[in-house]
Image (cartoon, one colour):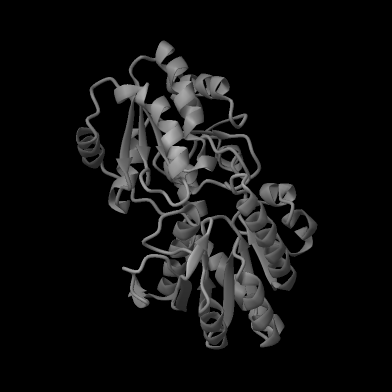
Length: 385
């Protein structure tokens, strides 16, 4: 099949949506399909077209940005032309431009798959209020036009203002997970590079430093954790500088992080070859997300595959990985006190949350997920035919 994926940001941009699409596109190529990604040329240093690991990437020029949303006059023209060349049009939402692409594709008889990654929830400003409203309206139109609507969990769909009215057409497919299982020597080498001292208990967090991720909840929990476990230390992996649209948040957070001194360490974006060692080195990882912008948290499954339990927020979608696997706990979103207690419990009794990492890996592998999408694509093609 010839499959077109449309989304606003692709590599080298780093976000959960980007990682999801990249893994799925690459897995589909490995299964013998032809895959094109239409995305934004959000930085002028990026080429207009290139091939990344067998995936053809086309980038539309960006005239300006409204909040985090790129305004691209050529995106619709490129999208309509590319849709005509492909068998399946796969739209990754939220995305305002997805609605007209869905309409044009359906008029041409093309099956349209919409993967709904999350409800948009921008910080409260007049401009963002407008952007939220327009985005929600566009996503409603896209969902109405799509041949199938995919999301990670039914739990999230039932709580989503957009999806809860479309459960009859909902297809649940888990996110694709890839993590390289490290050797013991790889973990030891990582600990040495990170400056981990003997006896330290490591709490890991892997995320962009963004408002919805709740890093401040973990930072406020740390004094309570350190009181009972003075050898605890946070290792934070992911982009933490110059995160688009999050500069003010980072400035507000910095004094809180400074108060923790060397008990909070930013490691930046790690190459894929080191992520497994990071997860395996940690005693527990955390996903303290605050709102429905987070719909699952793939980092939870990555951590579990490496044998490390997770403490996550008890919000729709995000609470599912620990419920599915038994490898961790959930706590109320934004509650630093309860988060501290949960972290201390997992650190003290890790055997309670050991789970079955091999079973988790088999259930969420990129190839397994790509096969489920492949089945969906084929059924939509038969229906269209």
